[in-house]
Image (cartoon, rainbow, N blue to C red):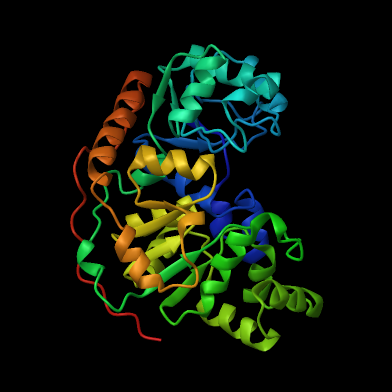
Length: 373
């Protein structure tokens, strides 16, 4: 039996709104890579959560679907202490750096270093999100590192197919932006992200996905206070009634990956700064343009061949469709995806874990129905 450390996708799917978001780790994007790992493993899995010392009966190996865990801000004392008390082989998939550069290696907490070194000792190698993460681990003395991107790309257990024929004018666009703090009155540090949120006004934007935005989730669930509504209107620079209508009509959050993919398939392109918004789009066969804004999105876009543009180079006052078409370069995607899926296959096999991955491109989706408002 394989133990999985992380969130429980099934618990998330049984809840709604803010409760579901909390169970997802305060970001529905965590569903994508966690559920992908469950689908990739071809044997019985047991959800361990993060407090698992009394739940290890029958567990022979442990897999950790990870995210941007390597940071001066994050500590993993409890997790590493539990693992150190066992001799169970442990594999980590898709770990990355967060809000740091290679000069900050000495600031990484010792519990994080202990965790990474324990996994290096007990697994074939650490699967990391990108080259910068690999460089940080090498500076920590960790050499068994493989750049794979995120396992979420292989939710279908194959290389996803991207349907370029969708890129015909007029585009119907799915949009997402990045805001983790609910203090939406303080926007100085995220001016460009705010401009991206405000694109909800565009007629070309048919759906807007929310992954962690507490206020918008409260609006969609009908539990927002009047103060929340006023602050949200100020953030979007919009009349209260108008922005509430826009969010209710276009806004979506997803507690299952299948619903996320179903919504994405209704569109012809994705635009946004959320890496898992771009991945969900790809899993739907829809071409994405990821607006990179930090080391996480930059290294993942590079490692996975996702079409991208640095957010400061995007002209928010210009035509959305024209810029998407201008910067949509899919030439790097298939070479990267074919290489990365082979790496994941090799890691599972070296770990002795049966898997469902196949190094082939998934079948082309049937033509999608045009989005009707």
